[in-house]
Image 1 (tube, chains in turn green, orange):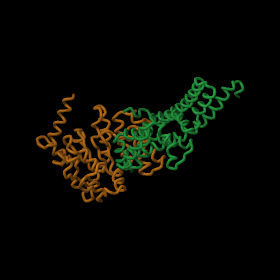
Image 2 (tube, helix red, strand yellow):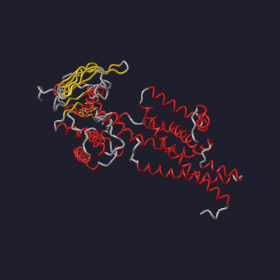
Image 3 (cartoon, one colour):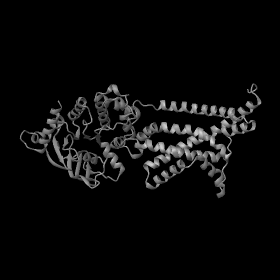
Image 4 (spheres, helix red, strand yellow):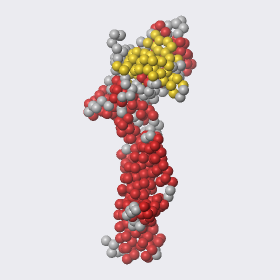
Length: 223
Length: 255
């Protein structure tokens, strides 16, 4: 398939396609895990008692307040000091999930807080239990309000997954950088890497648009 | 009105304070089958708080609520849910669920709270929407409805639960003047069908024509009560009459 390319490009595309697979393998579980943790922590920060709320606030403050590179270094190079050894892949995914979850929790929290008191009152007055109110009235509305923020975070995640190579997990950027150093052709290599990421983000945006359209409700959120 | 039957709703000596301000100071009232009682009085006199306390959307500090002669246990979620199913509530600002169509606003409590099947619930919802003149709006979302239509959906939603009594908290106060009529028509139709109602309102036409009894509230207490033909009679010098006269002057002034 790549016979028409020079050896440099053959090697580059082989490496990048391998890296692309690794990137996708990093992004998918991190996005799902981040959304899950974000939803759980965001809900705790809104509905739970003062202790859980403070724990949730602390988690979000810590992971939003420190650089992701620092978090990854601690996970991969720091934890062995206390006898915890993580593979590069595991360290990267855990780091991404924790970081993404902190940001997602902020979007979820904002969405939950934006639900008007009247929605709770209306449900309560009809005899809904607390859980039924959350499940049938609050969540469907909060999901629609959080969608834009959470989607934005996933797009960020696609790009900060490139940091995995600092803990030696060879994804798109890492694979590309190896080829670039070997041939000393940084401009071409990183331009092509950029195009790969652009492709991934475009796909993600198309998916998010589709979800937005599926969940669309005339006039919702405009009052 | 049979008075030997226990009242549908009996409120004994209800107290409620918020941050040192006492809003309700020992309010008692009884609501029998088919009765319509109207709460009037100046803003801040405790009408809304009283209505919200009756179905425990706000917890009263003291006092008892009796449904069909039985004391409601406010610590039990089951008895609270039962109370709220049997005593419907209409709000000033409708509180329709923004993410659901008019039809589904009605089907969702039927399915979740009353555990009725989807098809059955939809049939009932269509019937209730037809009753309030909205048979053609079933698939519209709240944002696509006018204020008067929203309030009519809210009433259809409450009625679909087959409540024994309805609490109405200023059902027309958030509406543009030209939309009040359609909601009043629904309330009058309900009255004609014998619905038991306790209503806070500033709407003279509802006070004078529908009420079996006027309850005049002032600073957290019911200070005057009686039939409108007595309280609102010319020269009765009642607080209710003075209050209604002022409402009349205001609405005359608007024209």
